[in-house]
Image 1 (cartoon, rainbow, N blue to C red):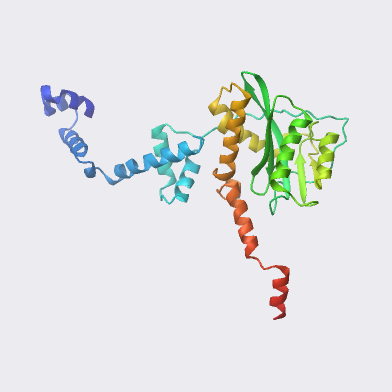
Image 2 (tube, one colour):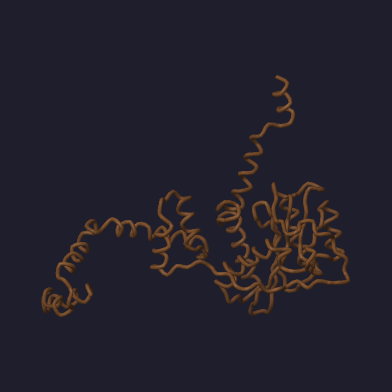
Length: 308
């Protein structure tokens, strides 16, 4: 209504227009005064004007996938003290929403004739240190060139993606490439790491099992053959589809998907806030672990201290 009064005030005057609209002229004059001098606006409105650009910046900087909770936590990490309900209210006003995950679709097909390793995880996806437990899985993406498949290897300790690969076919070579990237990047010590997957034929193949044995990695395969046996990897797949695939499609080429996946993995590992590890990025969680480990005395130092 204020805009209508602005439009017709010169022709009819403020009070006659307000009388027709059945609004108080004092309300309009207060609005006009605030338009001339923004400092006369209430504290909440002025605060909102300051927060809105910060909220938009955080939302856009994180691939436009954060909801109110993670935007609020990122603002706190950046030093901006604000109530969560305020962030939610302003995001609703701006029309900003977080990514919403869809239904999980099964991609791997078990081979009942192939012998499987024991289930050494039993749905307990917890690790006390990096390179203690990895989980692997892959998902599918529709493109103009046909179906593509994306495999991930995740370190359970901080949910960090340590290996990934895009392929046109669901072959053993495809998931082996993701494993090779993870082994090269992490260089895990022999006999200190468990690798867990579902019962898909690619993961229980002889070649995959032999590569794990050669690297000194203990294999583990879900015993029930459903999504709960590899729930953590399914969760990462779901985030990948919701935060990247569904929001930035349609995908034209394999090259475009690979570049976007590379960007998403880098953001996921170094920027994205993850609730299970305390709303910090995976790389920060690992850095905190090694920082605490460096502060602990070595066995020799501890023995010397005890003797003195």
